[in-house]
Length: 262
Image (tube, rainbow, N blue to C red; front, side, top):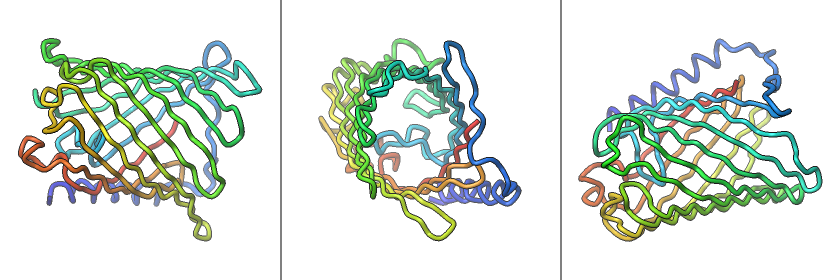
């Protein structure tokens, strides 16, 4: 617990340090980073006190460093709006076989039939370079994301499916619903969000969970200031420590993160 709180405190201290040194006259939006075929690049770098996926810590409750590079095409259709994207994302991890890295390559198509409705159909290849292929850690997910803007809030649904998931564990379904609400307090704006999900796996023991499925949830606050996205959140699951390798990696915990866009 003390090491976890120390990590969170370090993240928050870094937030204050960077925010205090930032210039108030910085541009609200960075200039576009032009890419081939009329597209654009976007890059981000995140520092987080814990890398959590579906309620489970993927780096043993330690800080993670996560860069990504995103490419998107110009609109291929203007009514409805349609474009393609490709993203490369990475993080340090601590898996059952030890510490290492994760690299995700995501690609797909995004469609905006109306101003309020957004659809995302994609595929992600999750790889763990440096780990033995015999561990069968690498896998692929097909995904469908739906976002609907209600003006006062945004409702999102996500379904991810893998024909053969992490550790050669067979098919996997990961369903998640999310609600985010913008909050404004004079000159400071926040976004509060809450999500709940269910992950089910065919060969669950090989995946590393004690039952065929489990529930996870998360809620938090996000604010943008001085070109940074700052997040403070709580996440948890219904997996007991005895079913999580006798660790607290699946238990309730608070984490903080900072993301900088380039």
